[in-house]
Image (cartoon, rainbow, N blue to C red; front, side):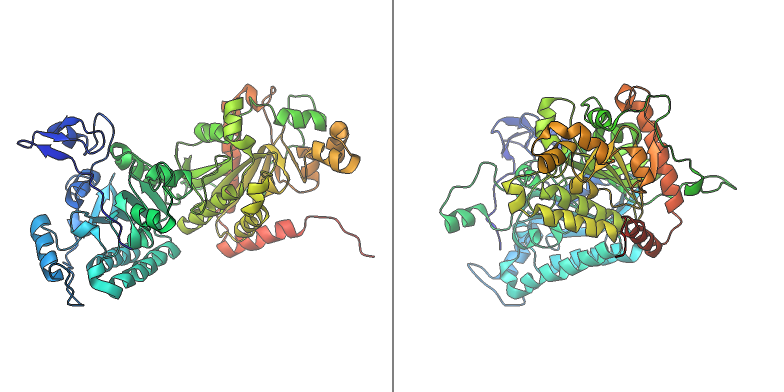
Length: 566
């Protein structure tokens, strides 16, 4: 469980003025390297930093207060290899000035209070023994007791072999502590630096709400030599790097060291639910008082088929367009923590006027390259698992969920079926049904089948005037029922998929008017309308208790459908 270390420190040449970069091999000026926080100005390689330096550079100046409890490891097994374990501990303490491989305390970051624990790889490879496990656990307990976000800076080769099974038990101890924070809605953020392996990867370091890694950091459970020896195969290019893990859905972000502090400041600003101040005597708008439009004003009524075609116009604003126009800030989060990061789904923390929210939506594109890269907004199972992960994170942080729906449907294909497409959609539906925070969905373009419904099981469903929403696309309906797609226009009318029809059927709650030329003619105006409608809806829902939200959401969908009794 302890990976072999890698040599990534700059090699000092002469009297500490010049060093050879461990990434590119070029000679760099040490003061310049220090000013760049250890990032090579030539190749961008991130050299390792000690815990003290990292805390000093990351937290607000002078804000760090170390924990008053000094926790150090002992020698519970009387262990010795070439030298006794006690001698190794003594050498590490003398060389680093640390009690053990982690430094913990409290401070502020961007004026936001945090409980922080930073590991130091120079102390026995950052290995986790009893002292590290106890320090991390106490930091989590302090965060829980004070309702303060927990920031973890990980750098470790894994478990400390010299403490045997007691070292192994630290995985369970720290995992329990992290889960208590998560269950209580305490924001936890883990920053993975080079390297993070073994028992640290398999416990607290990857259990945080947000997992961020530095570029090029090596991260894994087993070390690369162990894997190659066990499999007898060469490793893929870039295997176990931060970038590789991001691609495979294991990280929220890969963030350069120079922009990490601003990113974390934004996250700390966005993670708490905000209660808008409406002023003295202001009233919360009632949903019943909001007029429901039966068709977009100032525009001719489109036929159902014309509506379908309008919704597919590649000039229409995408989810990311709306987010950037509507939101004051947005931190995109990635990955399903299981298989991959589906680009057809985007989501993250956002500030929407006076409220902080979790916004999630389908993402298409405006040109062929982007449409292909985003799979035309058709998610794979990992996309729906990302939706559910972000929704559950929002629930833990007590943030409302805002979804934007625009997809022809879920991605078809062998791979999607092998990875459980149907089950992923079902779990997303079940998860949204039980969220204890408000959920507001808006159909902004296409709303095709279960692939759309997976983001639209909400307390309120809004719909743009030129959008459509149906059990199936008109073309597919024509193929299945009539043998070919030639009757798609007829099927579009018979499916009753336009906003006015769906309002009559009570499938949606409100139609949002589009500009006369459609949303694509004035994206900013459309975004203003959408923003106002979402905020109005959140105001109306904000007074409901969690149990009432779940009950009313259940009742909303329970009443839909028409039957007759024989």
